[in-house]
Image (cartoon, rainbow, N blue to C red; front, side, top):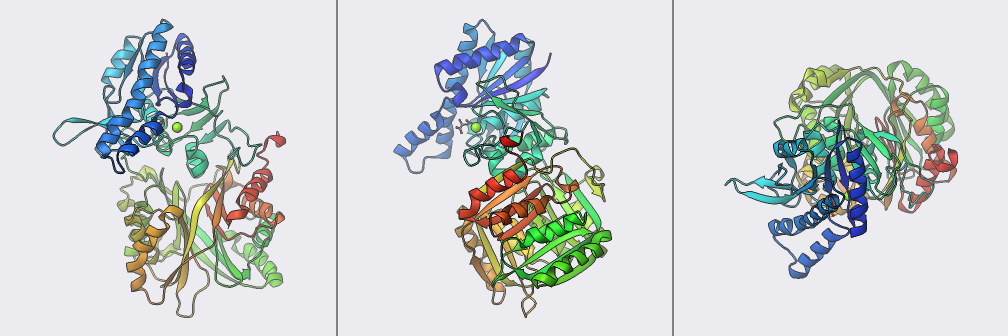
Length: 588
Ligand code: ASP
Ligand code: MG
């Protein structure tokens, strides 16, 4: 018999009729011989309504009382669902988070799960009961040892479900929801978006906003780390939905289920070459031409970076392996002859990357990496950040030192370190899905000193204010005083906080200034097959060139290529790229 955890969201239990329908579905699953733990959300918009009540009484209700209030929503649905199961003659028992042993941190409103004490739930399953658990809530043991009700944050029932599946070593965790699964992009913007049958948790995390609209990101992080099979499917149909997979399989440690080490991999890739094109025209089609020529030459480009600049020209930097440098240089030169601009190249570089789930949500991680390298006096030639990876390109002569220091800083063991891993040819698609993130702001810091520690200082100052950066790019061109520009993206809502956080630092550097770019949208294409496919970026840039969209910024990571465009071009760019990778239904 297999054990399944099944989670039903607010709409799935939104009315008495829906609860009865869900109960039938659960009873059927039980008949098939499964042991079942059911996790439910509050009915319909209950949590919003409860929040509304609180706000009608106080602008600033105590967090403890908010948790007391919000946790009642789920308590209604577990009791009703158990009753509905009893009506069908099925043994079932409802349990609050605290009864079922979901132990969390003591911070109210956004507590992370430390452990699930499974004795009671196991005994109930043993008796043949279906255990119906209230999602979104847990219990903290405060210093005095008294139990307090906590909640995990909005949308947290997904996280409850995956945590239970992890602790119980369930066969799978099925998330029943009101969409058929994870789609290739947002169907409200691109109506012919298709269902993905499968994708990895890493891909889901890289699809940031797209993935988060379907699942609580913390649920995906837990599934990724502990190797839980996660299935998203519709509660209205029998369609199989989307299966999310993960190759990582950590044992449950003593550190706390959601507090385990965030970084679990370090990769060193030697023999890398950096090619920097500066002062190329800032107009649609330049990146497309460059990367098409390279792709026709069979060259597999790794990182690509482009930032906006003062004036009417851009710099584009990319990496290839050393053996491909001369061919890549020739091809680039041939284009520069037509366009104007200069090429600089550098051989003997090393790419160092750390990986783990939820890097963007923990701004301290990139900051720690950069600080560690700067303490070793290592200058960062290029930086690439993403949800699951931070990479930087450094001089190879310093890679041994970097390896030791980074291993220590993140307390990694030998099995987590990979040196010059082979790029395996997978059958995975080069692009599986496309996400559009409109709520980003682009900021440049002009004329920062080009020496070890600059990026670290910027990142740390922002990390301390709880702000994550995406797409940190250093300019290719140098100012007369040797300084460079650093551009990055952050969430629009963090923009004001960032000014404040950076002020002391900017005061230390001479003549630096912070500049905000025009409104932007970021489009990210994600696919596990990207590293082993030649020409993916070229295809993406071509799709934009063909609709005459100018690319303001390019940033890539291993399985993600992101382009920043003007905000008004966001939706049409998304459509064009989705179409270019044949992800739409019309391509079936
Ligand atoms: N009821 C909670 C919310 O609306 C938790 C959940 O549904 O996942 O955020
Ligand atoms: Mg939800």
